[in-house]
Length: 142
Image (tube, rainbow, N blue to C red; front, side, top):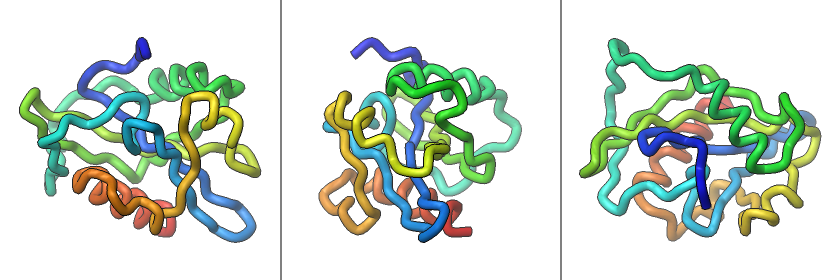
């Protein structure tokens, strides 16, 4: 899949039900980060440098909406979440975006071979992905 994201950027996509606070994450066939997998030896960095310059993630949200077939505004950035993953190729920035619809866009997920899962269904994911999910869940349940 040709992705509009730079090699050093990923998104975790989640849906939080407004009435029940049920949280589900979009899991792709390759893993939990949109729209490509993290490298095999990836590990989450404990401290994220606050001095680095990064592109504004709104550009990537619009590209993600397009790839998912969502209307503009279908995703919202969770500003409290920012993680960095160390890989042999260099650091990868990971941001968290949530779907703004009342219900998860199941058809959009299925069109990319993905499905929505609860955090308890993430067993078997790569250790870095599990660490990222834990951090994302903490922010979402704040």
